[in-house]
Image (cartoon, rainbow over all chains, first blue to last red; front, side, top):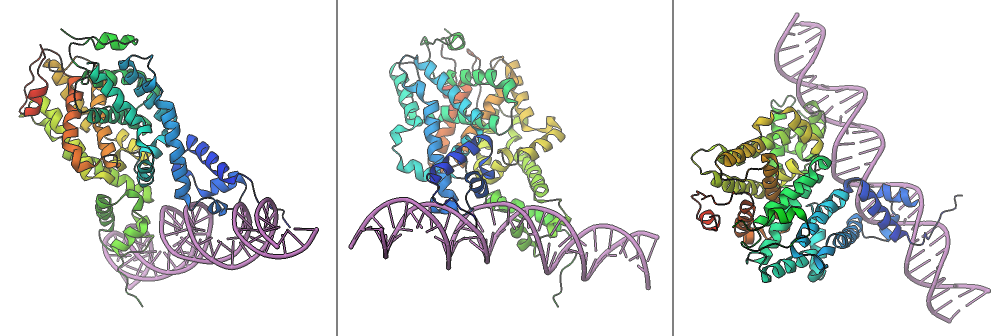
Length: 219
Length: 219
DNA sequence: AGTTTAAAGTGAACAATGTTAACATAAGAA
DNA sequence: TTCTTATGTTAACATTGTTCACTTTAAACT
């Protein structure tokens, strides 16, 4: 008679940790319940005592994923020691690098497959905590300081987001030889993007040499 | 004894047509072999006489999909009756609208899931046929005409592509109330993007009022 | 302490999926 | 006509998520 380890203790937490670790390495499609039961040494159906179904686990992963994403990408937006323009440059870089470092998680958070779960989560969460709101606020600061064109800050935030999302997606979905081209590509992209956002005839203050060189008023 | 319809005739073509039609309406994930066998009135394994496996069918769909994509998005790049700037504006709009009209196909063509198939296909195909090459050539024309900044045309093409891919993905993957915001959003995005690409002190010729208003030299 | 109860495990079974193998039929070439 | 081959069929398989009836154990309540 086999002695079973009933009452594992913190099985729920283990499932979450294992799932997060798995997604750090492989696509969420390959995360099966068998992977989880094998890793925890439990039976295939043990997980159903802790999550309603697989989607409920994914929901937790997405929740944790957004926390991780916010923690790793928004820091400069709240860092008042940084010049405003630099906030955009550095935050954008953190964004793309997060996607590069966590391609499977990024796809899980921003892809279509689990959009229904994401929407449910984001509708519950306090929207003011999100990175998007912080971005929008930074844009509004830029407008007040005369650095950015006075325009709908929501639209401008979307423009910036779409650009970063686009380059991130192209990179992690296999359209670019990442290590070769990434650095130069990001700078070109950022220059182009910001040229369209900054107000004319304003001297840009930045500690990043590239930005000083490129974004000075032309007249 | 049931009379079976052996030798369907053009079953392979039917599978392809049905699959394309299916993806026009639903996600490729839901395209199962059962869907195909039911739709053709054949057995579950009939498809294996025409395709090595499911991936081989998907490969055909992707191939057809790229043909469709090129046919529906690149027309203005070769239309010499259009002003150069308008080519970008109109092509970008066709791009986003293709994604909006064919979200499932767009995701299939540009997503990660079948990237291995896409890469195999694109490595075989003549690269000069692709829309990207046409975009790059148009950029080079713009540089020669002094309309666009003289820079690496490959990088500039990536910037434009990333921007359009980004906004398209955000829209079809559920981040925007599409009908509400799309038109205005696209214009803002395009203005911002193009401001960063055009050469300064050059009068832009366009038949699109928006572009005339926004992109004139400021001095 | 002893009993009850509920939480947290187990294994067997389901239907749906892609896939393969053995078999059946029909069409065309010899 | 006969043989071969293309093109179909059915049955079976492993893997997937999921449910159900059962078992065990920790803790709560006399």
